[in-house]
Length: 347
Image (cartoon, rainbow, N blue to C red; front, side, top):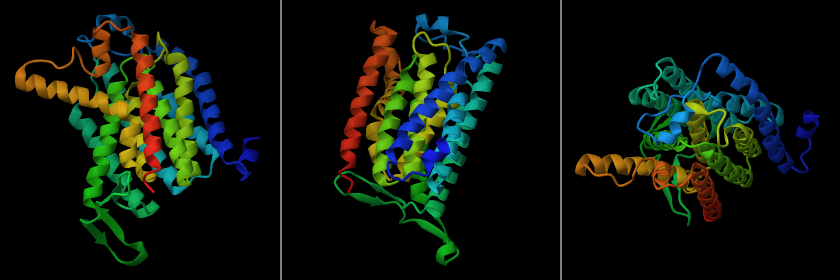
């Protein structure tokens, strides 16, 4: 029946909405079996000893639920839309970063500590993934190496480009744009990872950001990319059924790093790199809170926040976990709405 839907060009929006539904159903139905498997194997989340004390009860909660989410997104896209070069690039970037996160989760579980791979190991992996993605986007998909701002202002980051060969088969290496894409992908991956600290927080905020990116991709004329974003939003919905407070499963770095990379990939492939930073404003705030805390503490010995990332600051103020999560969802939705409004100023 799904195959019949694919061939109907009259109402392409149905494919995006159906992708949301299918991914939500796949992930929601498959997750209980995955949870049982993790429990039987004694594979659980390691909680920070210096974190909020009430989080210690979460020690041992099954993790790596992001693996089911990524599988759900892949299968949904496999049956819903034809695979364009853009979709291939985005999917490979997401799955490769998910694999990096999986190694991180396995390392964390194996050594019974809240930290997995070292920062340098993570960064090396993100460098390889982001550079490969950028070169494929520029040379295979044909994405221009520039950055566009609302209001029509554009910065050309292709001014420092090495060209190998000539003619249509020429291979371009836009050095400045490669650096920019790395910063965007590594930044958003780690920002979503930092946001994943409360039950339902990362899943809900990524869901909203992906609904926004689905609208952007659809307006951009990329139906496969819109379905991809919709499938991720749907996977988040299916995941939230089991991740809402008190969580039965965590997505782990397998999910958070991959979803951040998918967000960055969508931004590059729809030429909304700056808009994505507005839509993902909550993720940016979470990352900035950590950076500010570290810099100020090293220089002055004082803390700006009671604890970072900033969602823990509000917990320390006495907000319940659910209150923090719901209010951060609202803030995230506002950022997505603002970003989508600014998107219309790009043209």
